[in-house]
Every structure is written in C-alpha cells, then in structure tokens.
Length: 173
Image (cartoon, rainbow, N blue to C red; front, side, top):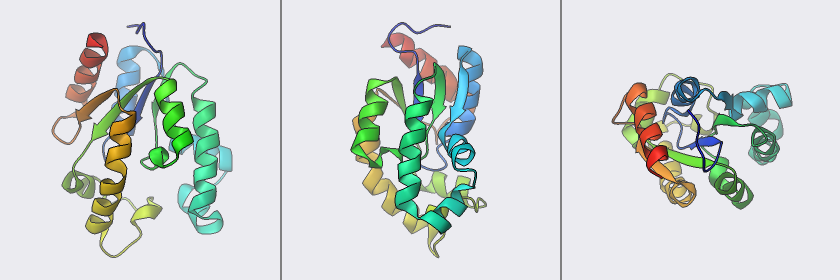
C-alpha cells in the first residue's frame, strides 16, 4: 500500500494510547518500517528512559528526544512517538511538516488501566497516577490536536480496528 501525499505515518498521543502496538501493526499492513522514538532514545543514550530522567533530568531527556525525532524523520516509516514529544514547538513543527500525523486519543481511564502495571514511565512516579494522567492530558490534548491530520479514539477500538480506520482515513485525505 502506498500513500501519495506524505510517506511517513507518525503516531502521537498520551501514554497508554497504543502508539507502539498500533504502530507495529500499521507498519506490517502498510509494508513500512516501524520506529519507536522511545526505543531509539534508549539506543542513542545507551540507558533506559527512567535512568535518563533520574541522572540527567527531564530537560535533557527532551533534548535527546528532539535529536532522535529528527533522526527518525529521515526514514519512510511508521513512527511511534513518546507522549510528551509535542511539548516543544520545534517538535510539533517537525511532526506537521514530515508526515501524516495520527493522534491516538485515549481517555484518562483507558490510560490509567493500560499504564497501571508499567513502572517504566518516569512521569507517573507519583502517588496519584490517575490525577497525574489527567493533569498531563489536559495540558497536552490541545497540542496533539494542533498537530493531528487524523484523530482516532484508540480507547474505544482494538488494534485491528484502529489500523483499518487509520488506513481508511489516510485514503480519504
């Protein structure tokens, strides 16, 4: 399957929205490579994301994230980003200019359920995870919407249905 408009498909959205899972399936169906920005950050920094946060801080993590995003955008691929990538104006500009941006929307309850047993998320190392997710979502949702060419409610569909809906919406655009 080939897309005429833009070659890259970039998945954005909150933690637990399914960017990696949906991205892998979408890559298979579209016969594209799959890149996960968080996995590429770990390779680039040679340390885990929690370790980057603990030893270098969030600001340095965001610097690394921007560098890795630019590297990933050199490939014709399905790219799953981290939830906070849209926090920087430069990143939002890069996303919008370099591919079809799909916002995987998931409500706070869905995010909470999907991340409740995941201790690899430094942003959620707090007492009240649900409130933290709600606070992050309220700040980031407008930024996701600003970047998105397509919005899919991944909290209401399984992976297969999300992939089919994304392909359908790309063909329509």
